[in-house]
Amino acid sequence: MVLGVLATVAPPSYIGIPGYIGPKCPHILNPFLSTSDCTMEVHTFHHRGIQKYAFLVPHTGLQIPWDSIKKFDLENAAEKYAVTIVSSITTAFNAFNKGIFKEFPIIHPAFDANPVPAVLAPYSPLTNSGTCIFNHLQHFETAIGKVIHAINMTLGAPTCSFKELVSLSQIYGECLAHYSPNGYVDHVINGEGTPHCMNTPECPPVSEWPLMVVDETQLATRTFTDDQHPAFKNVTDSAVSCPYLEWNSRLGVPADVWVIITTAVVTCGTCHLVCTFAADKAHRSSNGHCLDPGWSNDELAHEEDLDPNDPLAPSKGKQCGV
Image (tube, rainbow, N blue to C red; front, side, top):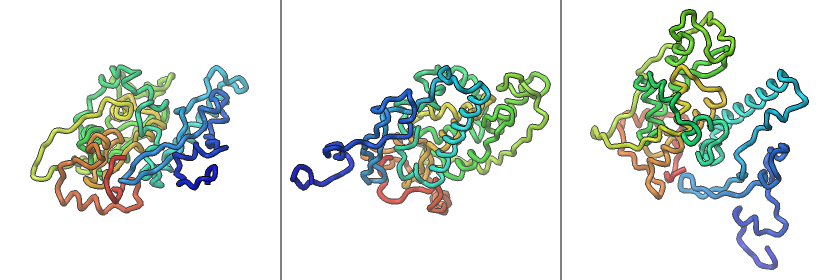
């Protein structure tokens, strides 16, 4: 009841209720953001043919400027910053595993690349020419490289192949960056004598560098019904796809970047293929329906064996764009 008139109340109409004040996000404690920056607004989106709502804020996150940290020495400040990063990694990882991003993809930091989330800004074509990244594509045509290419275009990749790709990531103990097996080898064995880490200022020698065996049969690419070979849209040059390319090279990516890009994926409920958010949107019609030409029934049956609670399990119901 509003002003004596009975009205249907839906989340977007909350703002019209007298005295309504939107909830605040935790960033309200950051003195470098205003109250209006941190006041949540209701946003409407469609997922699997269902209209849903989410509270979002205008800002995209803001770190406290480094030069404003006065009360900590460098060591303590670095430790506190590291704790913040670990916390954000854990939050994103847990949300993905619990299926939260599958049901509400709009709340993922990389769901919409406009604006680009701060953690991915160094990889955005809008702020980075990509020269460094595209000078390190030696492993682009490997089995891992082909899966990376597939998930970043409307081609898509089988869920088992994407899971295998993620499981192959190696963390180097000195710089704590993530690498593909080939990227890891290139990083420590760089043609300059004794293996050492180039990402650490002291360039410490590497005493142990375990090699991970890549079974290419676990990184199979999809096939097509009736041997079709249609054209597919490529979205490789983006703030989400470029980190995958760095991961598959001697450059590597930080842990927070790795978690963000490997959770910024969705499995289509019609074709059962994994794509990044941008590629999934591109593989659908204007009304949100899957346009994939289809693939072999044997492979599709294997994909349907996934546990429904798996974060990469295809969603059921009408398949509208996320």
